[in-house]
Image 1 (cartoon, protein in one colour):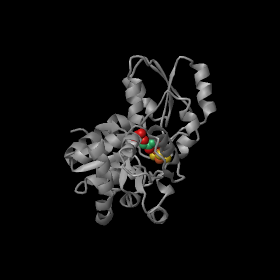
Image 2 (cartoon, helix red, strand yellow):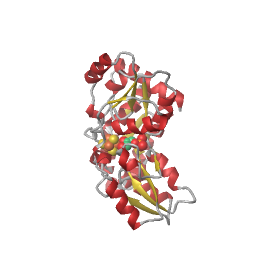
Image 3 (cartoon, rainbow, N blue to C red):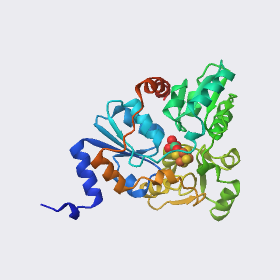
Image 4 (cartoon, rainbow, N blue to C red):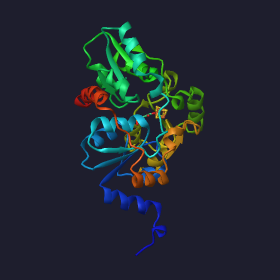
Length: 305
Ligand code: 13P
Ligand code: SF4
């Protein structure tokens, strides 16, 4: 029989995953080797949909804390593991439940739409959730002139431009995307004049204005597969380049900025995935009272898309 040490990390993860009936989900910004070992890769919407319907007993979520919380909200009877408990989302932490309750007092008639990049407690105070993939669709169907959008001001501005709906925006932002500048895009365009440009809607409006499209991470992956795309300037976290190259050999992908790194996403390593499966920690579990309220907002979103 092979000695434990003879097996690669990947083999040990796959063996344990099978024994424990676990599923490994990886966001498109994860390290390449983590994306490669996952059963499913995707954007926040796709991963939450998979988490809602999987029949695995354990979900190993290779992403950041709010994503694991969303999985726990949707699958309360499953064990949700986040291989590094410190993998958070700085934008999600830019608003807490008390701050949202205060804002709602100022705007008692507003419908509250909350980006999925938020804590479960904040979701629990919300009417709808949305992701970058469906934010326009969710807001467009709201029959109320007053909408409060939290926490990403830039996704909020993007949705306002697309729907023509005015919203009150919480001043949150993603540090990784907000750091990208129009100059970064102009520089890439000079070097690759024939390339198309796609960016994430968490980018600033002046960056989005220079792009052909603003799309969720999986939207970017679908765009890259188009026949008329051979060179693509990519304005989002650089971890996405791994999957883009893997699925599109022969095409050229140019990151808008090599510095666009979400360090929290990189906390997850294969070592930690293995340890997590061995020890069944760190577990993310949303308390039932919050979960039920948060679930209503997430379900309202899932009913629309
Ligand atoms: P997506 O839902 O587009 O994958 O985005 C998640 C995210 O955190 C972007 O920074
Ligand atoms: Fe949060 Fe930005 Fe990292 Fe996405 S890239 S998880 S929004 S900090």
